[in-house]
Length: 137
Image (cartoon, rainbow, N blue to C red; front, side, top):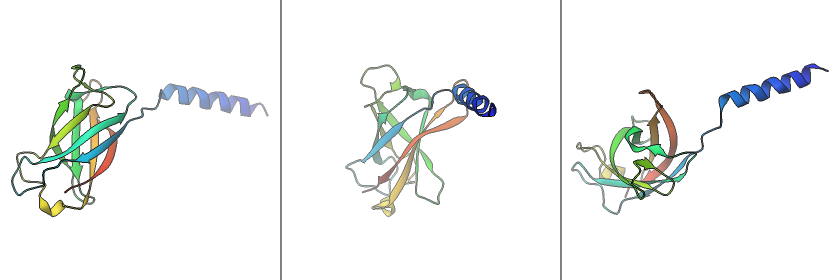
């Protein structure tokens, strides 16, 4: 019976070594403009609704894609309410199509997966932070 306390102690040590779990969530709202056959369409606004910590905007990548297809990195402008260069809860990213026509009227009414990723500290490795769906107009 002495093994149970030892196993419990080992489990607690392993979990504490992993550190706290990050918790992030986003919401995505469609932009009022319709998608066109031209590039640089306004797509959506991504808002950080929950965060363990702010994310440096320089480390952020936002991507969007339909299920079964490769997602595309989109351009964005940070609506930085406190001018700290970090995406904080309640702040948003206004996302636009890249300078190529990758999103057009064919997507209207379809659900698109939107992902927020950030570079890991001192690395070029990306980690997925949060995702949501967007229905294009």
